[in-house]
Structures are given as C-alpha cells and as structure tokens.
Image 1 (cartoon, one colour):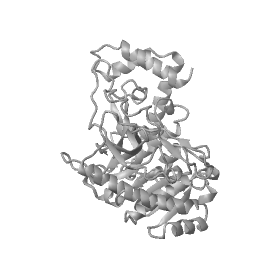
Image 2: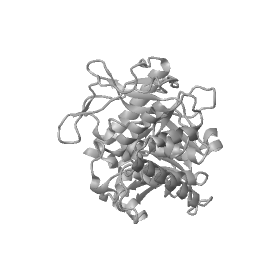
Image 3: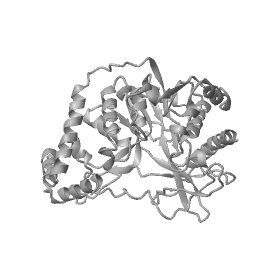
Image 4: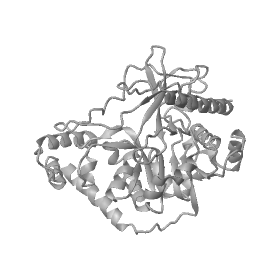
Length: 424
C-alpha cells in the first residue's frame, strides 16, 4: 500500500480513538504513533530525526550572503522546452515578466530554468527584451544545472525552494511563471507587514486538517489551518535563511516522503516557518476570477491575491492574478476575454468541534463547470480544463467588483496581445 494511503488510514484511526480531553500535543502524537505499523512508525521517527538534525546543523547566519539587495525570482522553462501543466513555462514566464514591467516595476528579475535551450545565452535575452519592448529592468538568466551541478535529480516543485535559497537577492519576491502582477510589486517591499516580519505569504483555498501526518512529523499541536499559496511569496532571505533552508530540506525530500500527504512545495514553507518559530504575515482575503460558460456556470481559473493592509482595514487592491488552471500560454483564441467575473472566499472557516472538519473545506471545487480551454497552441485540438467555483459565494456585482473586472480585462488584453507576438 502506498505511503499516502497508510498515513491516511493510520491518522484517521488514531484521531478517532484519541480521547476528547487529550489537549496535550505530545500525548496526541504518542497515541497517533501507537496506531502505526512498525515500519511506518520507524519512518516517521527517522524523518523527524532527519529534519531536526538538519536544522541543528545550520549556522545562525547565512554562509552565502546575497550579493544584491532585492529582486524578483521566477522559475520558467523546462528541460528541452518540455510542455508542463498545459503549456510552456517559458512562455508563461514571459507573460509574468511583461506584467511586472507593464506595472512599472524596474527591479531586477532572475529567470531560473532547467537547462532549457530556449533560455540559454545572450541571444534569447536580446529576443526577450525585443518581444517585451525593452521596457523593464535587468533580466538575469539562471540555469539550475550550472548553479547546482550536484543536484541534477531535482524537478518540478523542487525548483521553487532551490531558486529562492540560491537567489542572488537578499530580499526576494517569488512569482510562479503563470502569475500576473496587476500593480507594481516593488511596493510590497515597502509595506509595514514585510518590514515588521520579513516574510509575507498568501493563502490558498484548501485547509490542512489536524489529521494530516505532517503535524506529527514536526511534533506540533494539530489544528486546522489554511494552506499557503506559493504562487507568490515575499521573503527576506537573510533574516529567514534557516527557515528557507528547512523548507528546501522538506521539499528536496518531497517525492520520497512529504508529497505523500502535502501537495507540492506550498506547505513546506508553512511548516518550515512554524517549526523555526519565524515571523510572517499572512494576507487574509482570497478571491477567484474566471468567466461564465455557455450554460451560465462560473468557471474560475485564477486565484486573486490581495495587497496587504493594516489590521482592521479591508483589502480591496488585488496584487496578483495567479492563473493556476487556465494558462495564458494555452488561452482560447478568438473566444474573447476569460477574466469577466469574480467571486470572493468567506473571510475565514469554521469547523465542527466533534469532527474537526472545516465547514467550507470543499466548497471551492465543482464538477458542473464546462470550462473550455481552446487550442493548445497550434494543433487545433480543443482542451478542456479543470475549474473551480466558490459555489456558496455570489458573483461580485459591486462597483468595486466591476472595477476589478475592468482592470483584469485591461491586463488580459495586454497579455493576449503579447501572446500573439510570441506564437507568431
């Protein structure tokens, strides 16, 4: 039986058999471990010893201090321009860079790639600048295979922690290649939230349940908590380099262990910050953008992340549009704009004290959408894509909502114009 299935079965058993009065986390961990088969119990203990030993071995100060003050990090490309997640990461990265430059940001950008021939050499750098009208700041191409020759086995989500850990910037804004900046992201470095904590994270829609095995691997009191959404992260690497290094440790061992109960890299950051008791600010609001299908169903394909605001204030300014389901590199040609409607997630979740299950945990996925993705960039084949819908939330018809849709429409028009240039 796969590790993930064994973990799930054992965690559910241990949780259901635990006494309701067991508020002590160490007691709960002991009960959970007692329900495990011997091989799994040894594996949990081995992994716990492993990350603790790794953390203990780290010096307090970063042994590789950054050479530049601040900048933006993006992972694009792929081995031999391999198609991943429905489109070229290289193309998506160009759209991300264009959005940053169009927003007036002139911070230097590191574009990391996995020895992608399409992103190697000065020729491509000149071509990128020509395509993007040479309007931005410094663009640096970083090759994982050259920068990390001893880690040739890394792939997928593992690239993200490696790029942040080995960036030349002291303060990093990381953006996924399929993310779009709606406003100048340089402003985020000047926020009181970042200056106070040195780390700003944004939320995802899913919840990490108390039953998740990671709580026991890290010996923390289990509690429901919203996941991090790592499509954008603002991190002071010098201040939090031990936490970044631990996130990379978890993520490097992800395929062999941690991905069995956590999705990708996003919560490696969360647990690394919790374990090291590192300060961070988490932006609270969350929304999704999409369009209405021919049947009137809301087809959400983009996570909207807001600009941080002081406590008590209402966040209304969207900083990022993370097109995580329907990529700009595979958007429908001739179908019109795909950012025409917005829905907002409830501000927080509540959970049943008996089952410890968040009430809103599953209200964002839906099967009634018929989102049509369109051509895949030349074959003419129609693509159908996964979509999401906050089906308990109405479409935002307010003045603010319509203003946001107008802003999204303007940005999308710019990106689709660039898309035609790239593909033709």
